[in-house]
Every structure is written in C-alpha cells, then in structure tokens.
Amino acid sequence: MGPDYINPLQWHDAMGLARQSCARVFRDGGTPGDALKAFGLRPSVPSDSAEVSWDTAVARVAQALCASPMPRAA
Image (tube, rainbow, N blue to C red; front, side, top):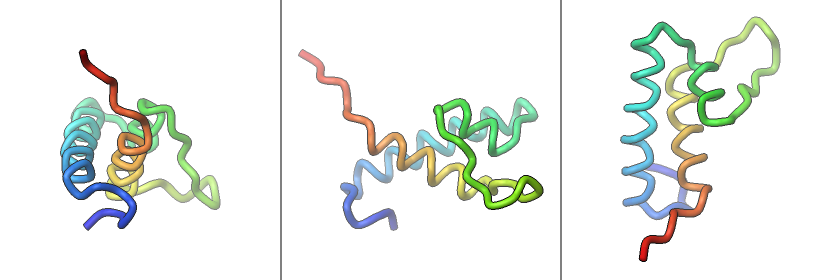
C-alpha cells in the first residue's frame, strides 16, 4: 500500500513506472542514487558511506511522480 494521501490507482501506476525506470538504470550499471538523480531527486542519507537501497529509490521516484501535476490534454 502507498501513502494514505495518494489515490491508490495513481500510486499503483507511479510504482509501475518507477520500477521500470529504475530497472533501466540498474540494467545500465547505475546505482539507486543515479536513478534518483535522473528524476531530479537528491539521495538523502545520513552519512556518505551509506547508500540508498533500490526499494527506497523506487518509492521516492513514485512519490515524486505523484507529487507533480498531470499534464492536461485537450
């Protein structure tokens, strides 16, 4: 389940897109931090030695997708 303040259908779609995008970064040899940078997010880790996990990266990318307004089509 996603956050309570996000529509469950929107969260499900955002998680699918985030997983797909992060999988492409992983396939190209990137790190979870690279995936966050691709979406304009900064890895927020307490120390330089700790690395963001893929689960955290996918969830943060999905939250970023849900936070931005959807483009309106005519």
